[in-house]
Length: 529
Image 1 (tube, rainbow, N blue to C red):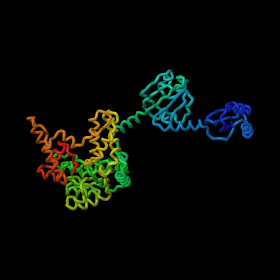
Image 2 (cartoon, rainbow, N blue to C red; image 1 turned 45 degrees about the horizontal axis):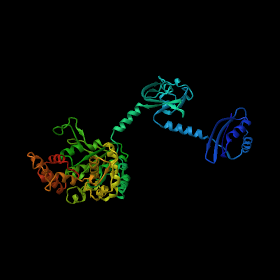
Image 3 (cartoon, one colour; image 1 turned 90 degrees about the vertical axis):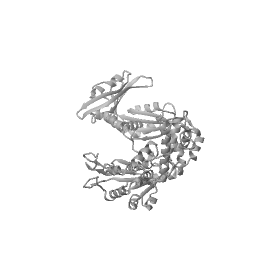
Image 4 (cartoon, one colour; image 1 turned 60 degrees about the vertical axis):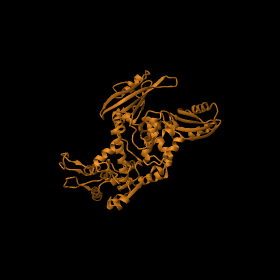
């Protein structure tokens, strides 16, 4: 059987199809498929024809077709538009992770994609056109849908020689423009896929460079450098003021590296020296009172194949700095009370808001460790050096808060934006986030004005007098409150004078742990010094 496919271009007029059909019939040919596409002043006609008995005489056919008025062009083609669309639909259907089958109004299969073929074990069988009852389905939900009913999330099990498949099924009727049922479609969602998706949604999202918001040259330069060195194993030193997003950069670097192990962060300023050592290096069973009998691996061991993020590394005591240096040089750790060393494959990223160079000069930070961790320094600019990013950062925080607070998206007035731009932002992006969240919570309408923007010192004025103490003079039980405010003030002053948490504790003549507890009680920022 000889088939021929043609594309004919006509100047648009009435009677084109009739003229074509007449000539094709005179030549003893049958039309298998015809598609007419109008383009205004022109019309494309696509034909597939066949001669059942003999080969098609193309020369004679073309000679006759060219006699049709307004024919502008004629050519042979390999594929009809309809065939291209059908192949495109097939690729799309085979690309989705759900099984899809459909039937016509008589229950004959019209569509079945790759996943459905797997579920129903008919990968190598041509089932299109066959009755749906021939498939290994225990029910006839698609036939039920032909009576104009819909079914949702029906749990099904199919057992074939390829195994057992569990999926949730949803079926609905297919209707034409006259609302007449002409078929039905079934979507099959694999239970395993649903569980995997639920797990992915419940797991903490991995931070990447796309989560760092900003378009100013300063922040883009820092991002560009971080991306360039992300897939290396080199030690990275992230430098920046409090609240600039040092951990965000560290997590992004880990995410874009080739490391498959975990990202393990630790704040070196938040733990006493003894606890910091056991956390970093681990301990053997019975190493000290309260130690686990089986011992405990340290973070360098836990992060094997991954990354350890040493935040506020400037706060580590000199003795601990020596041990960290040895890990960097030898790639080995020894647990507390251990007799052997273990190899570790861990990338190290450090961060600090302190002036390490000055600390090295004052012998508060080891010079050899400084040179080992400062191979690839990344300097994150403070917010005051990227004021152009205020608008995009503000909109980003408000967008997240709108769903969190169940509010409509709030707009920032020019007055409010001017107030934000005039602030020096000592707390950087973290402070901006807090200010915006405070404004979004306290503002009932969808516009944030200048009065909506309250900085920390403005809030303080509403609850403290000029002496910095609460106005509780009329309350006979206010002594505790007054002492708390005074204690907070003393700690803030001591922190501003000292280079580290431990130095501050020595200055106040209290233990490191006691100071940390008081800092948490008064909601003071550990990174503000």
